[in-house]
Image (cartoon, rainbow, N blue to C red; front, side):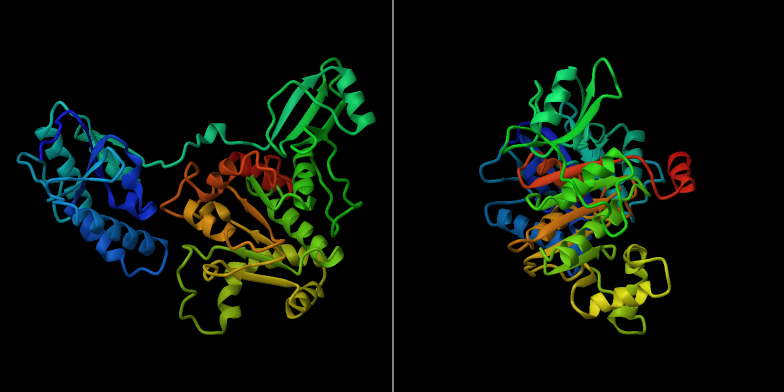
Length: 439
């Protein structure tokens, strides 16, 4: 088969495949070279029970289908794509420094990219890797290297969920009188709006854009307090509106530590479940990182093993129950009655969760595929709340741009049954707010 020498040449690192099993479909008109070192590394993950294992197995099955269509050494075209896939023997070239120890898989992958660049000097050779250090080494050797990003999300442009507008005084007066108003601006469904009098900043109003009304409408007026919690700033007012709105079945709250994401979500969940009875139970969960790993062989039953992971959630629930020694007992009573469940996400795959208020805490550590797995578990009448801080990510395969939480915010933007709020003002304490800003 004749190969066009000027085509874009892409060398994939193992971590790209473990992040996205179908990354091969994302490069358009290109020749994708997969070094032997990558195949060997993928093979080590195929028995892994977590997300890495699933992606490794899916990738291997995908490449096996290509193998049946022709020689992978010569290149096989993916159906309905301009992409050709090559499995490339590790290419070594003479004259490399001793620092490129060929016993290391990363160095063999880099050597393959260098050899391709030497073979095809008129083509652009790209090394795609989520490994920052490998990209640094590639730069030293003159190879163009970049991170793999399968999303269109620019972190600086991430949807905040609300917007501020300067309007004529009459618009604000109309809003208070008619309980709705329209403005000349493009707004997304359930986007929150701050209207400020252009001549008097103290004359203002806040509301939410309704797709049904095609207008900005007032926020839901909650009781004086929800389990002792009231909004301390305008962003928290927006968050409570989304959490209390029964028409919003998917809510995402993003913000730094201490902004009240989890506490507001749990307070609203307790109110909706226990006070209003709209949901059968409140289910609060968080990933035992990484998602899919078992909870281990430590002594004790499942509850004792989970306590260290779930303690932050218990802390919030007990705070809402009352700052006394009886709070833990009241929390346990709700658990015994089946009204409150606190559990890991490890075994959520395959479940159907109807008529529950599901809070997924620390959602920034999840991949887009894991977020999809969770949200598609929602049965009839279930509300899902995702909370997290995209700048506090512990998953080495995820960053702020391709986190599942970021992905969900962008994909659900403007949907009639979804709402999003970015919280920026810390309310935990003056010390916590200062630490979040200066450390």
